[in-house]
Length: 263
Image (cartoon, rainbow, N blue to C red; front, top):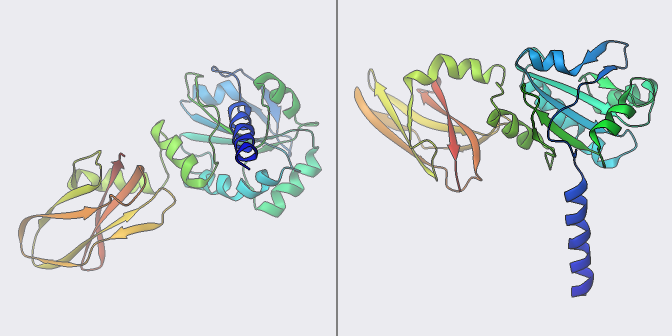
């Protein structure tokens, strides 16, 4: 039984090691999406955008399983209107097959078929060995992430934010409010302090959200008088990553700031 378990672990490790693009620097390509629109990689990178490519197969079970997560990340970062560009490239199937896959999984990301859109050649050039393989390319053409696994919304978002990608809506809100919200230490290993400048007596509390917008922690309301105060929240039970701490005053949103947790 131990030998069998060890063999399974070895097979899993081998699959993980090879299930990724083997390149370190991106190669340019020109493809057509399933609607006939031309897409060329380097002009997108030259706009200063990060590029996320999901190499998938319409008959691949995990590709369908994670498709909604990739779609959610695409929406989080502005559906290619922000500084992140998403693209799905299929292996083997034609435009109709990819369109059907997209329809049943609710995909609106630009998708390229293997046989009609040029996807098969991109697979070959990027030496993709299995699906799904999600990679992240920087504007300087460096492949920052060869294999985002598991390709969940949270993992993809974390990789993009670490590379400088901006979430549409959340980042706009932060840019307007975080200068007024002092959060320390940041990065933190658990305990986070937030300085509050209260203009008058009110109930204050802190809410913490993860990268997919789910509330993962909140403090009990605290009555504060006018003046400077410090509220503390313990985030030590959360895994390392990027979170957003929001200050609530009398049940209304005041300010928000990004905080990074370390192990």
